[in-house]
Each structure stands twice: as C-alpha cells, then as structure tokens.
Image 1 (cartoon, rainbow, N blue to C red):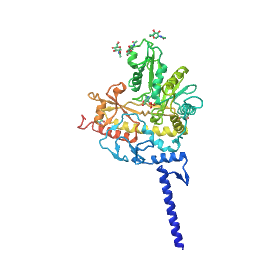
Image 2 (cartoon, protein in one colour):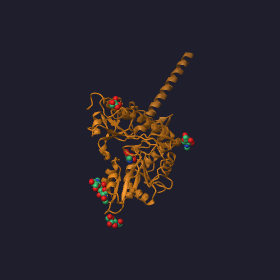
Image 3 (spheres, protein in one colour):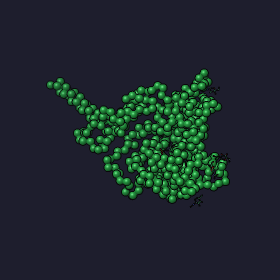
Image 4 (cartoon, protein in one colour):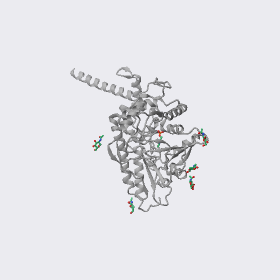
Length: 459
Ligand SMILES: Cc1ncc(COP(=O)(O)O)c(C=O)c1O
Ligand SMILES: *[C@@H]1O[C@H](CO)[C@@H](O)[C@H](O)[C@H]1NC(C)=O
Ligand SMILES: *[C@@H]1O[C@H](CO)[C@@H](O)[C@H](O)[C@H]1NC(C)=O
Ligand SMILES: *[C@@H]1O[C@H](CO)[C@@H](O)[C@H](O)[C@H]1NC(C)=O
Ligand SMILES: *[C@@H]1O[C@H](CO)[C@@H](O)[C@H](O)[C@H]1NC(C)=O
Ligand SMILES: CC(=O)N[C@H]1CO[C@H](CO)[C@@H](O)[C@@H]1O
C-alpha cells in the first residue's frame, strides 16, 4: 500500500517534470500556444519566438535571427567571417582577416548583457500613421533623450538648438551640404574636406550632381591656391577623423559641417561640449546599431534647420517610426547610470584592443600606426589616450608603396589610403568589428611582424 503510494508520488513527480520540460521546449521553440493552461498573449508569443531564436547558439561565431533564412521551419545560423557549418563551428584555416569595413559589432556583447532592458516589442498596429499626434515625423520623446544623452556625455551643446533625424548620418551629410549651399547655380558652393577624409563626402557630392554645390577636394591644397579669395566653401570637419582618429579643426574659415560620428568616450577623450552651427551624430558608432540606420543633426540656425528638414521631407517624408521606437529604447539604456555602464564597457573594449595592437606594432619597423596623444576627458574626468575606431597603418619601407598589397599578402584585408584621397602607402584597419575578427587580425599582424627580421623579407 505504502509502496504503491510512493510509486505514484514518484510517477506524478516525473510526469510533472516531463510536462514542465515540454512546456518550456514548446515556449522557447516558438511552437507553444499556451502557458499555464491559458493561450499566450500577443507579446508573450512574440517574446517566445524571439527568445527561441536567440537561444540558437551558433557556437558563438554567428547568430540566428527571426527574419533569417529558414530551414525545416527553423531559422539557420548566419556565420561570421571565416566560420562555417550549420552551427558556425568550422573555422576556415586560410581565411584572411577582414578589417575593411567599419561595422561596429564590438558592442554586441554589451547588448547581450543588457538583453532585458534593450528588447522592444512592436505590436501589429504600432504607429501606422505617417506622423505623430503633434503633426511632426520626429518623436519628441526621442528628441528629449538625445538631448539628455549629450548632456550626460558632455560632448555637444543642445540648448536652444534644433534637431533633425535622418536615415543614418549618411542622409544628413548631404542634407547639410544642400542646406548650406548657395542657391546660385552660376556659382556653386565648393565642398571640401581635409585629406585623409571619409570617401562618402566626395562620392555623395558627385553622385547628387547638383547645380548648387561641387566637390573640390582637399582643404589644404585649395587654400594654397585660393589664399586671397573669400569664396563660398562648405568644409567637412570630421572630429575624430575617419581614418586616422584626429580631432580635426576647420582649415578654411568658411561654413562647416562637423561630422561627430566618432565623438564618443569609447573612441576619444571628450575635451568639452562641441558648439558649432551644424553637428552630425549617428547611432551606428555610439551603440553599434548601424543596421538601425539612425542619425541626427544639431543645428543652430533656424533657416538651415528648415532646409535640412525640407530635404528629409522631400527625400523620405521623415524616417521610420519603428526605428525611432527602437532607438528610444537603446538610448534609455545608454544613459542609465549617467552613461557609465555603456561607456565603461565600450572604452575598455577599445582600449584593450589598442593595447594589444600597439604591443604588436611597437616591435615593427616595417609598419607604423598613428601617434595617439593623451587628453583630458571630461566624461571620465581623467586624462586618457584616444582609442580610435581605426588603425591608420603606414608601410615604412621605401619600396612598399602599396601597403594594402603588402598586408593582403599577409592575409589581412584593409582599406587603401587612396580611398581616403591619401597615398596607398597607408591602409586603414578596422578595430570595431567582432572579437573573432579582431583576434584573427591580431594573429595575422603578429605573424607579419615576427617575420620582419627573418629570411622571408619579401612576402
Ligand atoms: C565619418 C563618418 N561619418 C558618417 C558615417 C555614416 O554612418 P551612418 O550612416 O551609419 O550614420 C560613417 C560611417 O562609417 C563615418 O565613418
Ligand atoms: C550668382 O553668381 C554669379 C557668378 O558668381 C553672380 O554674378 C551673381 O550675382 C550671383 N547671383 C546672386 C543672386 O547672388
Ligand atoms: C595650385 O597652384 C599651383 C601653383 O599656381 C599649381 O602648380 C597647382 O597645380 C595648383 N593645384 C591645383 C590642385 O590646381
Ligand atoms: C627587427 O630589427 C629591428 C632593428 O634591429 C628592431 O628595431 C625590431 O624591433 C626587430 N623586430 C622584431 C619583430 O624583432
Ligand atoms: C575630477 O577629478 C579631480 C581630481 O581627481 C577631482 O578633484 C574633481 O572633484 C573631479 N571632478 C568631478 C566633477 O568629479
Ligand atoms: C578661384 C580659384 O582660384 N579657385 C581655385 C582654388 O583652388 C583649386 C584647387 O586647389 C582650383 O581648382 C580652383 O580653381
């Protein structure tokens, strides 16, 4: 009698465990329609789907996504560079280290650590309208958080300034050129930047082929030939600069567009709030969400603001409301604890990478990288070295004028100096990609440098 009771308890216990396991599996694999005997709510169902996909491990060398390719009803792993196989566990041995693009995946671990605060659920009827209730296309709530963020970081003055959102800062770069240009087609405004500069300035200005502005190249050569002319110029001031991380200052004294894509504590000490007529920022290099395509311009002058706003209107009728919701959520996390958790994480990541990179490069006479100068950072209240997004590598040997080819022979892919209107003796290496990418880059650089004094000089 007592024995059968015991058996029954044991059996019931096992059944209950089995049921629990089944529920859990069901819930997390997204097939579940019930929880504790009632149907899932719409947000629980969405959450179960998201968590089910996030639980696919891909060996840490890839990710599965809700909107990824599906095989047998399940999303498949999308592997990072150099990894393959259904679970991304296979490293391809001869794979080159790709340090070309500025894809800011270095912050992915931060967002995985902050999964709870940063996730967003979007209902099927979320903001279907073109506009917000106040007849604008920009979320005032988001605007408030952007201003808070700048005041917490201390990197830009926003009081009394106008804000315009764009599809990435890319869209705003050209919107700003348009807004600052003269409307006189017989004398178009001259657009310039200082070599080495981000190629998009030239590419966009040429692509839009406007009658009101034209790209005129490097500020310094322009100044040599136009010293006495007070001409109509629009100068891109990229601070910190892509590719070399310099905190650039204007050269020409005309109208300026400050591109502050990298003006965040992980890349540079923040000497004080930037206070200029047109300043452009982007989510991409702040939180790492380049795919969200969100940037903003901070503008002093009302007329310029209205022109930029017009540009965005004519180009797109404003930007995605879904994007704005997600950005709001991310920025709320970014300013938590006065920005300390995010920027401590991001700074540590970048400074660790720089420490390891400089320790390898200091042994080299064949390659050099840019000098870094310490500066007081108001945000961390400490003097620190910058830790730029890119290494600007120079090949020092006379005969190695094509640095990209030299690195490529060592299985490293960079971006050539001429892409930035500089010499090909320089190459840019991206330091903001995933940890896997960085580890492989460092491994390949270590091999190249260790071969320098050996017999294989001409590899
Ligand atoms: C200097 C600079 N400005 C602007 C951008 C554009 O960024 P996004 O369009 O993602 O905001 C980049 C991207 O690499 C950049 O390096
Ligand atoms: C347009 O530019 C031309 C050539 O520089 C100049 O002669 C003319 O006065 C300008 N027109 C206006 C409206 O500024
Ligand atoms: C600038 O002027 C100098 C001397 O007048 C000339 O040699 C040079 O080609 C000019 N540069 C450009 C880019 O026009
Ligand atoms: C190679 O030799 C040079 C000159 O003697 C030295 O400065 C450099 O550190 C050496 N590099 C390595 C990787 O040993
Ligand atoms: C910044 O650091 C200095 C010296 O360590 C200290 O005296 C000062 O109070 C700090 N300022 C702030 C705002 O924390
Ligand atoms: C008016 C004038 O002299 N413009 C020149 C300024 O310099 C650039 C190149 O450095 C020339 O292309 C312009 O013609």
